[in-house]
Length: 434
Ligand code: IMP
Ligand code: MG
Image (tube, rainbow, N blue to C red; front, side, top):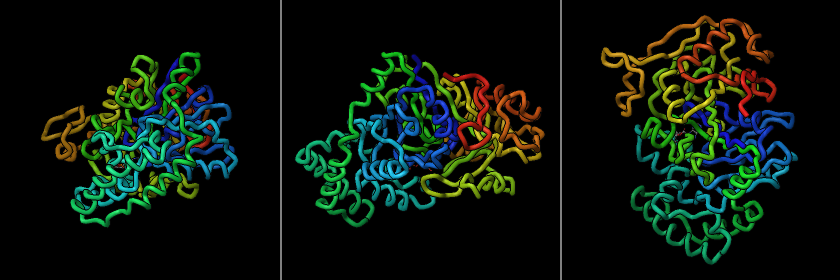
């Protein structure tokens, strides 16, 4: 049975949580494979509106196992708070399993994230400040502490001591920051370890066993492909692998590339980015404000789920999107927030870039070059009518149908799902994804 991956195709916040929530209906296991609580998913269902940072969006369905894979950087305090707040709203969290091999965000990671951003001044990346980057840096430097290490306080103390000493030297020596106190850090993590124990397990076995039994498994991406450490707009990227490449989804839950049957990319009908870095189609006019504040009164505006920062807004960038389709091996596109364009008279799509008098249709690797490209646009007449109640493709206004068909051509990938509002049923299923 298929293992399907859902990835963000742009710079994050494409509406993956919402798409996973819809597709989770058929899955037996829903697993997060990357990032940490820098991610934020908003899900609206009959139980209310939820903002999740670590727990997979499948948690709202009874009888589904939800996995936080080894590729996720887990802040145990944030995870336990999220579990508490779900339980307080009556959501059953007993089917949640966090990988014993997942790296942990430690107090020094959060401190260094903030200090490092400050030290970069104007060149700051605009991170979410949750300690995710420093955590992954320690993982690669083989100094990380994993969820499994919480099991034995003596071993934990030993592991924490050497990581603490190194990182405290960095905090004080490199950044001139305030040193942390070991006993406070240790007491806190020992207690977190006690509380998190019921949720810890072998997540890789859960995914593989479900797959062998012939059950559907959904791998839930976080952030977006253009924030990918390798393929994104480096250095303005995140520090894990949000894409579906075998170093992303497969690695993050512990499966080989041939076990993945299908990758679905989620794209907004326009573009947003939060944090710094190149954004060729960025808009600074009143259309940007209109798109950002669309549905703001219902908490649906373009403001970061994790940080509350206003998101930068732009037209759909088909050059960047097609690149993302290619390196993720996308089989299908889920196009979200079509309804946000309902009252826009003229909709633009960037089809290529102009650079030093030449036209290019790929993303240059250097930030300084990508910052200089000028988007080449084509214009599409808007439909100027609500789409929020449409459930069939053929019932969409002809201009909206033409827009979607054009997106398919430009992205070289079929649009199999369209969302026209935040709730589960506000979706047009063009082709069933499972
Ligand atoms: P970090 O992941 O906190 O290190 O931040 C690195 C970059 O990724 C910054 O531009 C963040 O704004 C961005 N980023 C991280 N997580 C998300 C997300 O879930 N959605 C959108 N942008 C994100
Ligand atoms: Mg988000």
